Image (cartoon, one colour):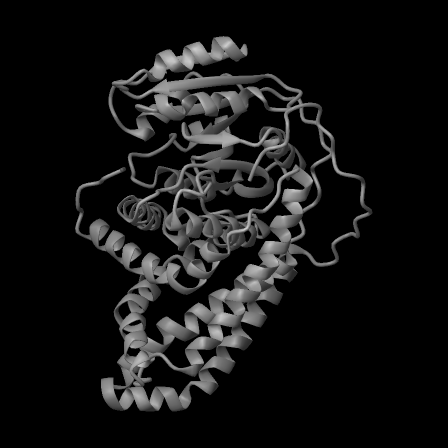
Length: 450
């Protein structure tokens, strides 16, 4: 996904936009109604399946299995699809924010990729002052030297702060103490920004209500051509993660203002105590922001590209960390403790994921193997009904994302093999990895970041 040449910001042509007729609560009610109607239909159609399965594994267990692989996933997919269809955020691409911002980068042994990160920061088409704070978290390579040399070559305002004790949360909190602007944007050291990324992120914040404390940007894959693993992840970031962000952003409760690229109000970060000592520090800090009544938005056109794991081993470690981070968030702030109803509902949905991932891993995957041999005890025609909804949601998101890319001067790469693998096999990898992450967290096993 190549970037356009840096230069003068050229906004897209003005297109008359109709006023949105539905309020956010009305859209939420419509999505809920569609999802519940689908669930009721699924229950009615599954009665013969339930009876057959109950005769083999008992009625309660049959109900749990079918709920985990059909009822709940179907409900979640329909709610997601309708929410994505209804998501039409106000256009911000013509806004020209000028307020100063600080970009905060935590780095430990990042000499290899840091040059590119700083180069793309220097290319930002932004009318305000951009300061950069690099927190060296006990690096043993040339991270600091590379950063200072690159900043000098680019004329970039860079400050280096030392935090010798390892830990990303420590590095971020050390950097936060040196931030002097009202807004701070976190950027991972292996992440590069589209030239208009900062502009659009700040523009969304300025267009938002005063009780918005953070805006999550769009993070996509940077190394998608490495192998099949990265090709699948390209579609996960481009369609799967982006659609969930769209859904949550519609209800002003984006559950993760990810550390790779997100904007925060500096005073609110300090109010919640900064980033916690957690494997999912960005998840927990976002939920603590919710806990104090603030809202978190999402901006599709504020795009960054990050390195994704290129091996199954590193992929499994990353996604198990994400699963552990979700449990940390649920433990730190219970969904029913959230003051805003949308945040309460969306964080509550996360309570279902360990159950559905476990059922998928222990029942659906073995059931699929049995179905291949003609035994349709668990996987049958009814379970396939979830697939058209998934494909429809992916199709809607593809059209939305393609429109965003055109606005940004980007193009969507052809990646058919990755898409087929993503649709057919990705969840069969994701669910077992997530279950392993849940087990690690419940057993209090040692944390591993890489």
